Image (cartoon, rainbow, N blue to C red):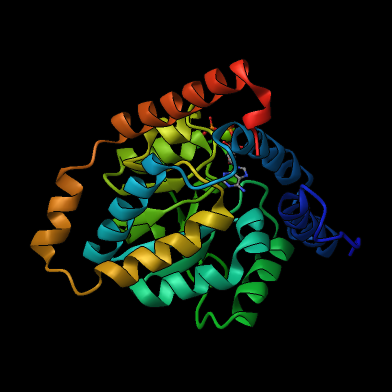
Length: 257
Ligand code: ATP
Ligand code: MG
């Protein structure tokens, strides 16, 4: 691993890159995943590399949806496994969710490697590998392949860093889709029921915190959180946040931290 000084102004961001590069060298992050991360980083710069108020709303709604779910599933790809493996396992245990590997660039080798990474952090079971698989309609990549014990029968799916096609297909199947995506304009962000516009490395720990805060709430209280949630409004608030921030910066660049 490249040595990076903690005093470097972009230390955090560089450390995230190092994790992805490590996953790439180990053969479970694909080159396309590195590029997708770059798109995310650009939006992170625009929002200010912090969890912004609209994301906090989405995190609360996501926690409520996961706690209300009968059969929640967390879908994991190479980037998610490289960036937040421990947190994914923790969140799955807390919410009684299944973990399923689901890859756009699918190979047996990558599936097994991702499963092993998650197991090394304590996952008891990782779906999408050995058990019976099936396909969901209207997706033209390998991501259409899902586990009959996982996404296929799930009512709520958390699909971080997802592709737009698949989000739309999962919605058509009647699933509640929660995503984590730094780009508020992506098809995924617009098609999901709940979009957390935040970096996955900040969002998942905060989601765990929120699940812990809400876990003793009544179903009624959780349903009320969801009733008051409007994803389009949240996406508009994110864009407004970016606009306001850029407006302030356009007056005085020294306000950037
Ligand atoms: P869509 O298919 O939804 O229209 P896209 O084709 O632009 O989006 P994909 O490569 O399919 O993008 O999905 C990756 C998404 O993940 C991107 O929108 C990117 O902004 C986002 N992303 C990348 N890295 C991170 C990260 N660390 N945290 C959160 N989001 C991220
Ligand atoms: Mg896409």
